[in-house]
Length: 262
Image (cartoon, rainbow, N blue to C red; front, side, top):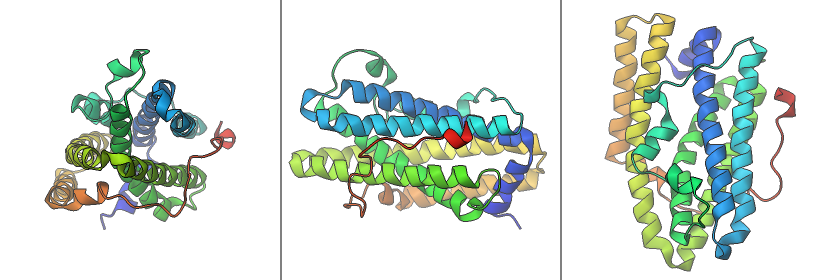
């Protein structure tokens, strides 16, 4: 039976597909770490209290990248280049979502609007990350090779999502509510299209590595398109709602380490 668990198990069991999966994940996390690090350095004076939390977010993302590299190293694997069509982070930037890398490379302070844009973009993408890691935690939390990594990363992603909710609500109460909702909607609609395209590209590469028959690849592609149709019709709304999280100040304090994976 074709299921999310059996599909990922198949990817996990093969060295080449596992290497591609971890390489894609590590690249995205490392890119997120760099972006958050730059944003932490450039937040305006009026929002300097936010800088340590943004830096903590970046440190977590860097840690996740190291974990995925360590998982490959444990199996004697080296990372491979990420196919351009499977580079989720860069495709989002090309769609104008979030803050452009050209802007982050300049040593010019961000505006409050820039910070709101960053948080709205993060709220959408962290929703996706939290859901994906929740799925992996459900099926592989006890796996001898990846279980500990899955649980650690899943907890971090939940914290990132809680932080985005809390900070966006703070800005909404300060009068930025309409701007936040507009940016969230734009980000969500762009993200679901990018996620569809990246999912199709990744499944195409996995299919060639694992030798999937055309019928299996067609079923998976149809499923990806069905998810996009659901999200386009209204599923995207889960990415734009805001509510105060149960855990407040989720990114207060230092980041946890990944020493056990080094």
